[in-house]
Length: 102
Figure (cartoon, rainbow, N blue to C red):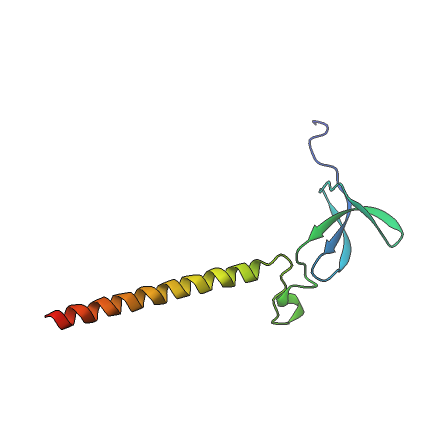
C-alpha cells in the first residue's frame, strides 16, 4: 500500500460562532489555530452554525445569522419587489394612454 495517501486523522475542537457551543470530534481537517478545551489543546475549527444554534434542532423560529447573509437577501428581495412594482405601474400607465387615444 502507498504511504502518506490519506490525511492525518485527529481530534479537532469545533466552535459554533453563533452560540459559542464547543465539541470535540475526530476529523481530517488540518486547522492552524489551536485552543484549550477541558485542559487539552486541540486544533480548532470555527463553524457558522451547528445543531446547538440551528432553528430545526432548537425548535425556535428565530434566524441565527452571524455573517449578515439574511439581511443581504432581504435587501436584495426588497429591491426586486420595488422594481417589479415600478414596472407594473409604468405598464398600466402606458395602457391607459393607449386606450384614451383610440
